[in-house]
Length: 402
Ligand SMILES: [Mn+2]
Image (tube, rainbow, N blue to C red; front, side, top):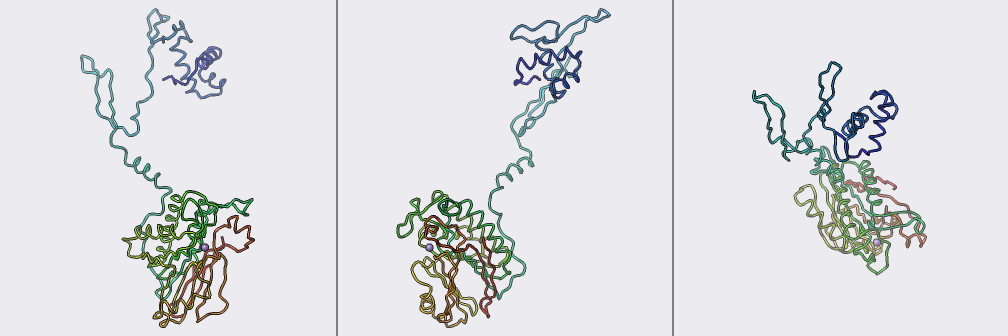
């Protein structure tokens, strides 16, 4: 079958060379530097046009058969050879076969009719699998075999600022939504790998998980921010990343508690994250999404009392008294008390343990934007997990620099 792509020049050139080399297809192919099958295709077309004799076809006509007289005087009629073997088109099945037979019932020609039909199951499975390549990991996550009932691990998600945009000439680094998501996921995996299999995990969004509430990209106090992407897009990526973190925690911990504190950048956008997670995990008995809308978080584990807040409304030194006043019962029942704060993007540990509470502020893994860079801030970037023993307090931590 002649390809429609062949030009008249290509066909003529092939016919000329074929005659030049003594009508050898192999020699023609060698001379033209192409495959023999390609030469054959061109020669078929040349024959139809009569370029190989005996007469050239008139414009718009082709030669359908050639009759010639053999050396012994008999007539030889040459017809076109059949085309390639018939192949059923992908996704089709044979609908029917009809035959043209001679008076003796012998088959002269056959028509194979196909129609769009049931697809090959393997073909369908491969097509579906291809669609899921970029989807998050499948759930449900298997329950980990052995976890330590005496341990609890907090995974602070400190000032992720998803949606922050930074341009290297202005801010020292290039940073955008896609970069942030990729780097955070990578770091989450490394943190998880260095965390013991405590029975309880707490995914603690420390506030400013998102860079902004709206497409205007402003803080609560109205400062203009450098944003990447539209709010819908950022929220979508933020939910997916939170699900990634929770699913990761489910691999190593029996129970996962999720709490996202509000920050001064995402007072409203964070609500969407919390509610999406609550819906996502509503049928999973291993996940508890705490929808508490307040700015403060308290959690008791054995003799350990934990507290947290973003930190835009109170100073670290105020947290111990607040803890004692807001949850006096838990305060009285515990011995080891810790406060987690964020907002400042750098690491501090309150020098004095006020009322036996150690309050720390967390380093952010986010890149600086032009404003922070311009202020000359020099904090490092990391993520971590902190593990507590129910009777002994802090038991260890895995710190992962970015
Ligand atoms: Mn903040």
